[in-house]
Image (cartoon, rainbow, N blue to C red; front, top):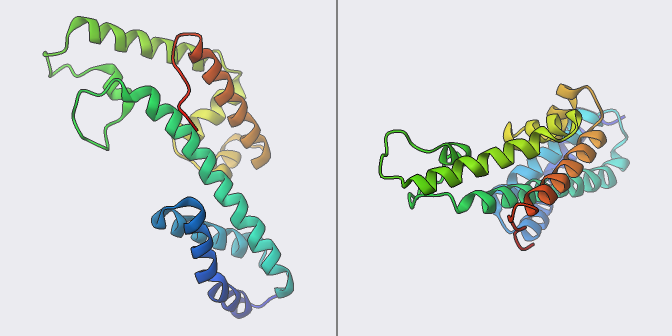
Length: 190
């Protein structure tokens, strides 16, 4: 069993290399820092009782899985961002909620009736597609991608394993993408 000081020394030793590896992989320094910190936290929370000799392999596996989680989230966010991007009204507000954009702005009476009708019809299609998902897939999808919970938080909330959350989310995304394609929405390029 490693002491807290040995764990701290190990993390200090791998920090720089892990950051460079992750920054190269995700091409975003801020995201890379978050990923490395998440991986370090997972190692220290879940494996403090392991011998120091096991830390290098454990940490690499945790780091790789954390990067995969990041890429999955990005892929889904890119899909939804692409679907909703056609509904913007020219404002450059990066914090705008796509669902609010779809709902229209009651204070802005410059919207054309056709655009408002299109937004409401699109929102109805999306809501119907989500409503048709099996309950567990719908729950996992909403918690992960709309509530922005990580896999562990979602698993704890749903009372299931992290692997189940990943499976439910993957199936939900594929089902939603297929359903939306039938209405003429296209998948973004990978």
